[in-house]
Length: 285
Ligand code: SAM
Ligand code: GLN
Image (tube, rainbow, N blue to C red; front, side):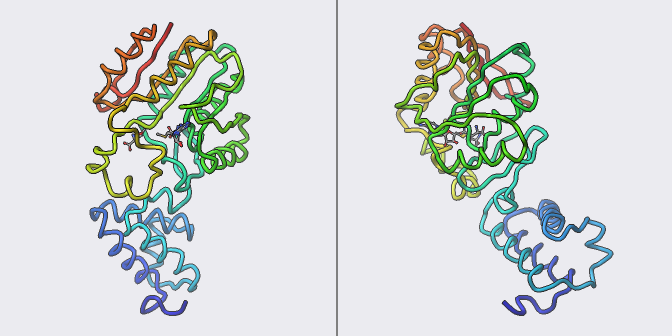
């Protein structure tokens, strides 16, 4: 493609990107995103962008930023455009088959690491997506036996790629947890950030999430928002070695989830996230 912009100057490309990205971000965020794109694709620092404003770049370099800016203007999350997301000290590969790991999930990982003694644990991460939780635990506790399961083959491919690149030995298994069983092992701890958003709530969510992140990762049936928690506790009850189950939860369902666990023989402890909302729950026997 030739002459997508009037000239190949850095300043022209930067102005174009700022304008397109400014359609979906406020001015300050747009500047940060533009800086991030130039750093990622052209290895330019924010200072380079000023000092080299009148330099020119090749048509193919130009195209990289041009295309990325257009994707972002269509509400595609920056992490999908760049193909990577930061989680607990790791850069994880992500694509539209996996949820972008969230900061509150880092808080869940922190809690697990603080809470359970670094003995010989066998930890199962249910609905592992990019593998974020499983990989963070394995990285912090290399002696643990860690496995991540997901119903999505595409998600497991991303998780596998992450474990290979990070050289972390985690087992990945394809399981539909709503119908299948836990993989055979003496699991001591189960962790899950399952889907927990009802379809009607989706109407109030950001376009970037609803239009681009996998609905399989987000949504639960309107009439049964706790379906994953019930099923996971049911499976945990069948595996005698499981002593702890850590969940990320929906802030609106903390008491319902506690009650559900109690009715199934589990003692619950809620934990607030940094914003003061009950977003984590530990069940013990
Ligand atoms: N653990 C990742 C994280 O915290 O970033 C992803 C969590 S995402 C909210 C939920 C995950 O559960 C998705 O990866 C989705 O594919 C998976 N999932 C949905 N239904 C499932 C099922 N029936 N069995 C197993 N996994 C399922
Ligand atoms: N916390 C995520 C969001 O707000 C959803 C994660 C989930 O459904 N488990 O989009």
